[in-house]
Length: 239
Image (cartoon, rainbow, N blue to C red; front, side, top):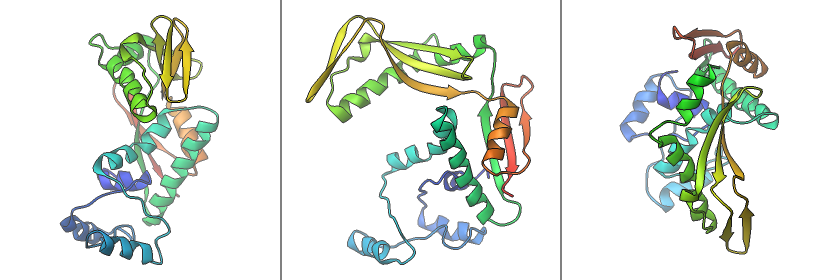
């Protein structure tokens, strides 16, 4: 499970191989159909995919898009409660199905961030150099690009704190003063200090993550942690 390609396949993500890699990975025992190489350009390759009887859907990605897809499992495990917890469980069920398809001995190896003291967690998401703050504000630039809005990142303050009741770090952007954001066909007035909730990053106890794995249908989990108990790596069989 340490191979990045295997991790991507477990996450249900697209994987791009160089031609010479395909033969090597097939020799390594990937089940038939997991990796297929379509030769040709443009219409030749497109027609081969469109007419293949076993292909129900084809997704075209660029390298940048594919890298985002590789994060889907990780993001689903970091974000959300309630309905999104069901999404986490479903994503792990999909991972279990892929693991089981590999035959006996399959399973999932995954690392999680554990619950820690607030004095340790919060500085990691509100560092003195402002790296995380810049990352958070950068979201507004993406919104501007997608919607044609006029968010001014410099007018939003980075806010990060640990919500112990929900066992998560929350990241927000707080309006620095009263301002109005506009986009084609609409606008929104923000009061001073009004927040946009931009991210949740969940922290786990071993017991809680083991329960999530059980909900997804995995077998009894084993986990290892660092000496301080800040992080854990879990192994759970697919059966």
